[in-house]
Image: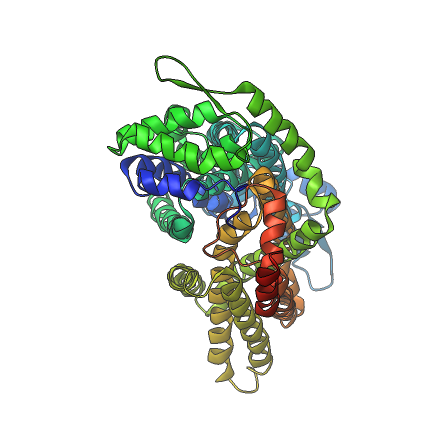
Length: 570
């Protein structure tokens, strides 16, 4: 990708210093947004935890007298179960048995305020409502994936990120004061939507502020922040184990309090500003960055004009009008012409569905995201089955996340995005199918239990690696004008997988072979689709759809055709 039409920000960022104080502040601020994620996503495990209970004792003897036709109450035994009260006769010649619901409510083994399940009596026939809260959260992330990414492409990454982050803080904190289930469930949807808005726009921001060769480092830092988030929340949750769920939720919400300062420190994406012809804002921010990094302002600004503005205007549109005092002002006529040209060239949201080649690439990406999400969360939800002790099983699953982050760092640049994604999907598919085979015969051969668990963990490790990679690979594929929308649609497909994943627990109880078979088969299918996606390793981020399509065309050319085109000059 070396045509004059490209916006080469890499030269600007390299001249500025990709790891200077300015970048550390900007990228650090964005990466910090990942720290509260585990708190919000996993909070339902603790605030909505199951609390053992049974029916309260009947206080009104008149109820019993009516039920037993005013017979001697001493002739009957009352047994209080979790969801019912059994009344049976002591006399041999009578076989009376009456079943009652928990008329007086429930008695819990722990204080009611420890869990919303006990405070709101979400037990027995209502117990599914606690699982519904997690489903609603995933539903909300799907809404956020569409809403906030459209806003990000239209009004800017910073605006979308700040709105999502502030809403994240308000919703998360407000949930601690909700008195009933229904409004809490509504806020749970909003919590998921705002969390996904923060996640997607943050990813786009830190990928668009660093040179091409360092994007994988930023993505790896993102995966490390997720690991830190999980560990931090585990420690915090243990420390709050004796507090009520409302205090727990209040702490969860306040983890996003740092967003109060974000609007005053975070800068807009340079690539988005360029795509929307806001060159004066770019120059103002570059001057600030130069001062923070101790660089010469004139050198940085001139590099921006030479490497970015001139190619954007095709060397034939008057760009700068120089005043007598040496200051330069963007030519409004040139900006207007370029804006009209881009408006004809791209219509952000609809362009994905109107262009057959872009739609094909997008559909493949959607399927990969759905596969990775349903497989990752399906295995995560069933991680307690990896060992007879559920805590050990969960711990083993957590270890695979750490190992996957390390593997991501080691392979993503050396072998490229597409090849790494293909290989680890293949490993995941084969491992998960193998685990099904071994687990199916573990009753006949107990030694197969270890093999089945091992293959399941290998599959979890492989799918976690690819899932981490998608957060880097996907925004690299789409051009700037539709990057957030393309990223958002992919994440929305993942949310569909997230909605389906909880059902894998029920499916496992009835058909233990089914979840692994479905997950493994989907991963194998992905390996056949990967060759149709472009490689983005060491490639400049495309600004326009035309640049994206040209890059894909060049990658499809064989060396023989490339030599022929070089000779003919075509």
